[in-house]
Image (cartoon, rainbow, N blue to C red; front, side, top):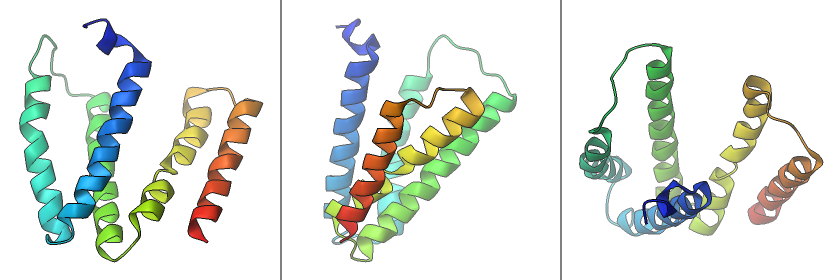
Length: 139
């Protein structure tokens, strides 16, 4: 079982399922909760798990990588805030989720620039497909 959770493919599927549950459950919550309340409750609920996972054999350090992690957390919070508002303002879940999932395009571009990851024909086709998906879902 331990080996199973060290496979990036299994972890990716778990992430997909978690994000899928997040979108559906949030839509239910926002039917009666203000977006600020939903964001706060979700963040507070996740804190004990984050703390439990953070307790372990590692050393805290304060350098630019910690700053990157902090900025990533702020980016995730801003994204969650905007997502909550989009859903609460009446955005259809089956459009808002695929549309906001296009953050992948930002990551692809910046991973090429900052991490020298290759831009292959398969990735170009994937990017074009993602853009086409945005167009079709927005119709």
